Image 1 (cartoon, one colour):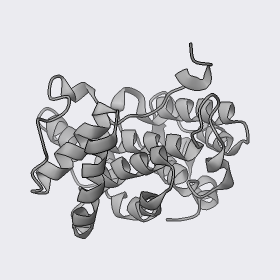
Image 2 (cartoon, rainbow, N blue to C red; image 1 turned 45 degrees about the vertical axis):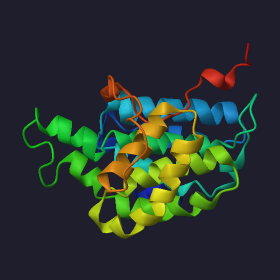
Image 3 (cartoon, rainbow, N blue to C red; image 1 turned 135 degrees about the horizontal axis):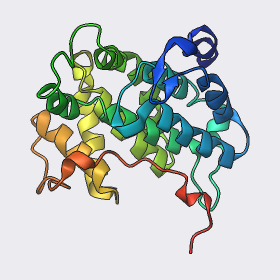
Image 4 (cartoon, rainbow, N blue to C red; image 1 turned 90 degrees about the horizontal axis):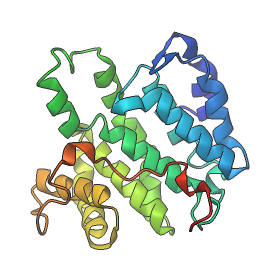
Length: 233
């Protein structure tokens, strides 16, 4: 992984497509992820998602944006606590990463390729994004040992999606342990579905029926939005 500062400085953001035109505004949005105020951080992440992940689509700017977010997982700002809950922003960043990876997962890509000729052609935006997975895995894997439950679960879901890449097949036996843990402990059915499908795809015979088997195409991994910036009722 290149350092996040290099990704920010060396990427020609203005030349990259987002959901709403060029990515010229992305450096300012990405920089706000390092603000000490968690409200600013979460709002910036929501804005980022709108720009590079609107309607569950992979854009030209999605790859560099994901590289930046992955690169700041070890930054002190990632340990800022979210308001009204004892959760580090790192969990939110990993949840966003997992949600974005799901939009380019084997399941989603296979479905889209049926209807869009050339969807996975060499050099396509989606193919280029999927080629980043081995590099991203190295930055996510350390958090599979995190002491915070929400960070650990978000890292596990991201890692399971990344390990769909053939170059990461050697990690799947170890990740199967994390997948079973998610199935046993998670309260988020979309996350449990990712874990269940990974075990099935890798020949590990997941227990019970597939979570969210009905209308599953609308269900991605759990990713926090801005809703819990407000006090609970």
